[in-house]
Length: 445
Ligand SMILES: Cc1cc2nc3c(=O)[nH]c(=O)nc-3n(C[C@H](O)[C@H](O)[C@H](O)COP(=O)(O)OP(=O)(O)OC[C@H]3O[C@@H](n4cnc5c(N)ncnc54)[C@H](O)[C@@H]3O)c2cc1C
Image (tube, rainbow, N blue to C red; front, side, top):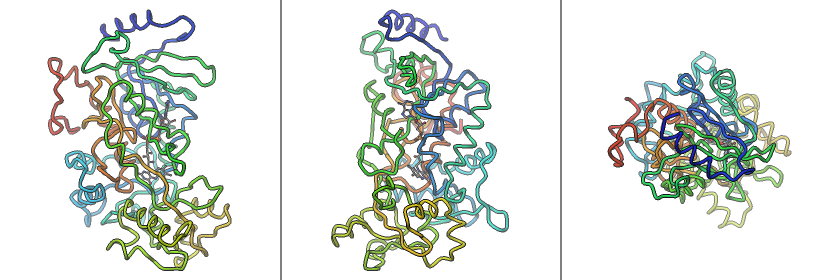
């Protein structure tokens, strides 16, 4: 442990009230969250030091595991980085940071290759080439997928790799409750502040543990559970953002909550998502009277960007006094639907809806937080030694509205970039607190 950190630890120890913090653990890297962002980061640094990875439920209880549609990356000669960038900028209402968009898009093919190397088996067509699908806002077919359970396969592969690595210790049922920073420990105003670790509640024993680390990474996912109707899992309660905010980190774009247009409308379905890939493969949104309304709203009709489709549905429901609209893919062959969307088909069937014969009743629901903890191109926050990656972060990629399937890609690219950033801002520029310009800190270093 660096000298300064061990001095802080001694100070921290003296501040502990006997009986409250019984245990203290240290590691080189402390990762909070076991979704794609946290797992990818852990794997990228584990050969260089000890990693403690804490997660508040079982390791695979994540939004990542629920991802259906897939992950976007330029894959064919018809496509180009410029087109993927253009689609991302347009979906984000031209508010994304162009340099960050370029960085993520250009690293897309390498990110897909990394997943393949970790053992992810993407779906292939009859000719054995990858079966690329399309989603709203994309001008090309560029979505790699594993039928309609892409996230489950990614989570499986990454969890297996993490569990096999001798330097990664996983702590399940451990909830991070607050960041430990130099300013908190010394009770002084320090700018920029420095992160020393995290207080963590062991949910099995009720014990609070002080986890210290040279680098702390928040990969705690989004905050969909703030809303009554959301397709997010129960873990998505915005903990990382709250902790970073309390510690004084900059939080940005929290008003940009994305609503997914099509979640299953059923009293017992807990907002089950119907992937945008269903529309990508030809499904049409209809009113109760059968009218296909999306042509009235956007030239791309049912494949318009998400915010436009969600607002159109909301408008139709309010204008016509309907509880929901209907997603119709019944014109496709039965065998195609059951093979391409087995999970969605089976889940709908369990609620008495056969999507091969009936249109699926759907409504919009809270889906993805575009804002979060502000980070630079390496995923570092404005608190030294504190990184934030994945949905918890505001990297500048999404602007006002995320392009479909860009989220898993962002988690991978930033997980890798943060892992490759061997030094933090402080040690790179010890004499100044000024932010280094993004272009000089891009991950191609
Ligand atoms: C239904 C659904 C479908 C989606 N489909 C797609 C898709 O097809 N393509 C795409 O690109 N994106 C998709 N997304 C979005 C994407 O899945 C998420 O944005 C992405 O998986 C987020 O990954 P993450 O690692 O940042 O967070 P998560 O996967 O949500 O993981 C967060 C982790 O943090 C842990 N955690 C949270 N708080 C604490 C705490 N206080 N202490 C300890 N641990 C904590 C959680 O337990 C969890 O392990 C979808 C999302 C949903 C909900």
